[in-house]
Image (cartoon, rainbow, N blue to C red; front, side, top):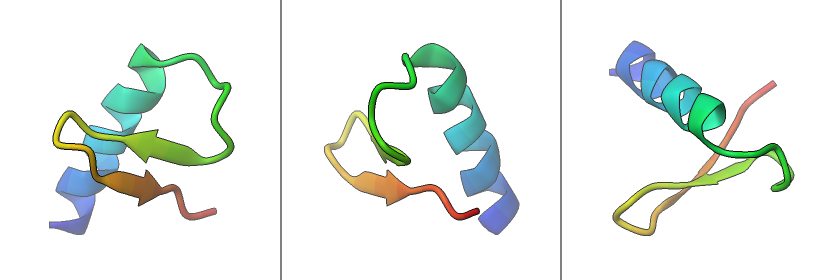
Length: 36
């Protein structure tokens, strides 16, 4: 499950400009904090 989330974050990171400090919002409105 962790790997799936990591892959999902990679897609989001690719799709969005890097203007949010290590935070990614999904389509459902949840916020993921990128670790590392």
